[in-house]
View 1 (cartoon, rainbow, N blue to C red):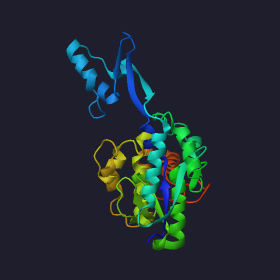
View 2: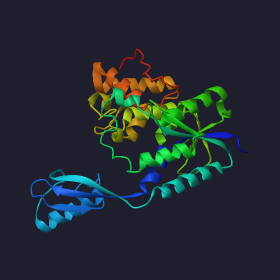
View 3: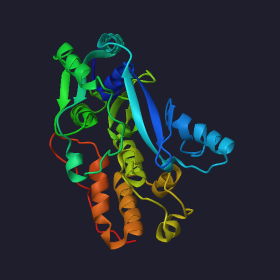
View 4: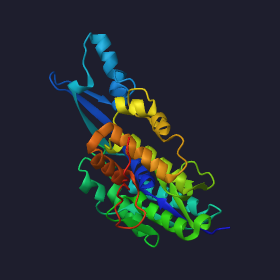
Length: 316
């Protein structure tokens, strides 16, 4: 029975549809010797994050008995268009049509990024360093908005997943488990939103997340930060964190974040442990980094209401 409204975080879908229109490669120029090496991507040039001396650079060093590093090169992205915009139009029409064919979908709210984003105003380095959008992104986006204008919602002042979150929270608060809203995304960070969810990559049946589960996911994010968005979180385990939570020294990964929150079965407990963990790492100056991280990773519950961390008077 078609009775649900799919609140679709559509930016990723649009990005992927535009990415197929172009072919990217890189050109690496040695800063001193001025020779060039074209490669398909940075991985084929110097390796992966886990193996930063691989690819062509490793082979070159071995063959020429040199010890160049990736820092010895200027790397520029070279992009060329290989398909016309109509290819993206067709992909997008088919994608939305497939979603409408799902047995539970009554209607779709196509949520796209609008103008501005408050996160850039409170943190100038937010998402700095990310690769630029595909060359034809804005042109295809304009067509997409016009093509589906009766369904499109633009997230002015925030991100598309903020507006998806606002819709999700509205349905959860008003209807509980009978919410007509299904949050559509492919990003596990959206699992902080309570209510019904649909992963449009996996295409499985909608799944339920309650408020406690959502808060746990949010608290994990606050502890971890997000390297792709330049959000620090807890950069490492210092002596106080190691002693308080019986953690090994090193970076804070998902296993350590879960251990910090282990045993919490209430929202108050989860937020308390996050606050105490920040107190352990940052000392008396913990409030500013905690509140900033919270504002950056917490999705909006209401339009134009920027979240603030609910500080309490806790002691370590």
